[in-house]
Amino acid sequence: MTKIQKISFVSLAIVFVLTFFLFPALHNKPVINYAIVYITSSILFVLMCWFILKYNIPVNYIFSLIAVALILRIALISFHPIGSDDYYRYVWDGKVLANGINPYEFAPNDTALTKLHSSIIPARVNYPDMKTIYPPLAQLFFYLSYKIGGESFIGIKLLLFLFDLMTMFGIFLIIKKLKMDYKNILIYVLSPLPLFQFFIDAHVDGFGLPLLIFAIFFYIDNKKTLSYIFIGLSICVKPLGLILLPIIFFNEKAFSERIKAIIIPVAITALMYIPFIFTGSPFQALMQFTENWTFNGIIFDLLDSFIRDNQKTRLICAALLLISYLPVVLSRKDFTIKIYLSLFLLFIFSPIVHPWYLSWLIILLPFIPRWSGIVFTGLISLTVFTVVNYQLYGVWKEYTLVLLLEYVPVLALFLYELFYWSGGVVE
Image (cartoon, rainbow, N blue to C red; front, side, top):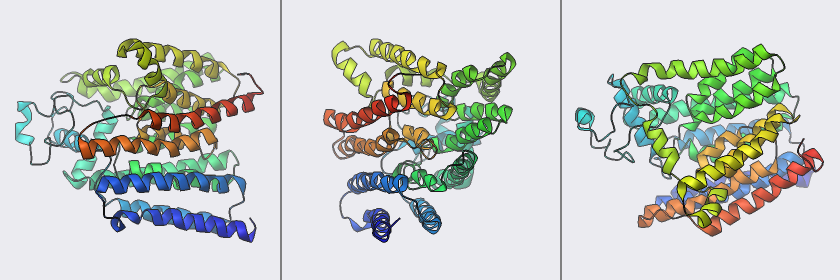
């Protein structure tokens, strides 16, 4: 980097960090502050990625920025969640399990659990008439969080901080294994997405990310049995890891290895569910969620504006995903690129794309630095307009303009990269 480039990069980094101090400095309602800082920092993040990918970043800059990012994470732990109230459900599930009750057995407002009620939970739990949707390993983390912090969000955030450190370490190991530039770790470390979704809003996805990262690392490091174990564990936090199974199945030549790649993750998932299936219904609420909920899905919203039938539109989106996913799985592309493309396609065709869902994509960007993903994880901050409208006026409303601003540049970049990688055809 030239002296001017260094000054520009440092200045941009300073402005990026200072945006987070707008929270106490602004005098609007918390959700307004949240929206301003989230969108501003996301724009600055995309600009910083341009510097990171274009220029050689001095080692001392890398360590300094990592240190600042860790300080920001620690500072945000004390912030009460603003953009989401999901953590009340996590605390409730943890409390139920801590009292020796199957969290899949009763909905929060069931009279059988009245003895566990407090002034905070389940009064503030969203959809208190629904049983929990979260898989068994997530339940274990909720239990640990409750034992650490009680009904406070602090227990969850402290655990998330530990898991975020594991995620960074796993990304570092992959970068080192692939002999890539260590500066790329900054793409994850500096992203506002984990800062907002884990260290402000305390979303459960942060528990699953290091499990998926280490699954990828062990696979490319030829420790495949360990990889399959970690895939199974990641599925037990959020089922996105399932998308790796067909990729690995067709990536392997030996039939025995293909069988292991399926059997081990499935067996681990089954073992994790066994303690809960005899006294509860682990999949009841999850089925309700997957059948009815929608948010920020570009293809789904576009099709449903014509079809006007939730279930039919979901089936069409599932079919389109399968049609686009299979050529990726069967292609000769690199293993990690297949994962990136598969997750990207999943989010494009999904009826539900909350910002924290993209955390599963952003962990891939340090070793698959594609602008489609970088811009996607930045522009999804625009969905905060829906959150602002809901908190201020009580109306959950999606905006067509937000969808277009978010997805049009992302899809344009994705298509360009797809053809650029493969010389015009899918391999």
